[in-house]
Length: 65
Image 1 (spheres, rainbow, N blue to C red):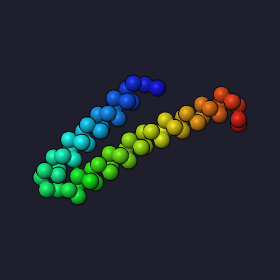
Image 2: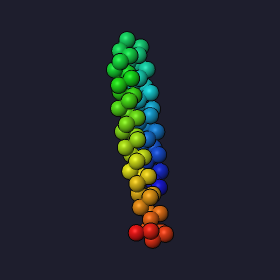
Image 3: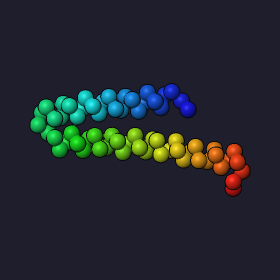
Image 4: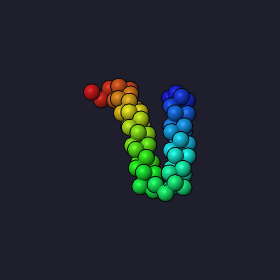
C-alpha cells in the first residue's frame, strides 16, 4: 500500500475539518454538513477501491476462481 494514499486521505480530512469550521462560524451549518458528507463519500470511494483490490489479490492467492 502506498503511503501516498494515507497522506491523500489525511489531507482531505484536514481540509474538510477546516472548511466545516469556517462554514459553521459563518452560520452556514447546512453547507458545512453537506461538504463533510461529500468528503466522507469521496474517502469511502477511495477505500472501497482498495478493498476490492484486496479481495482480488486474495482470490488470486488461493486460486478460488
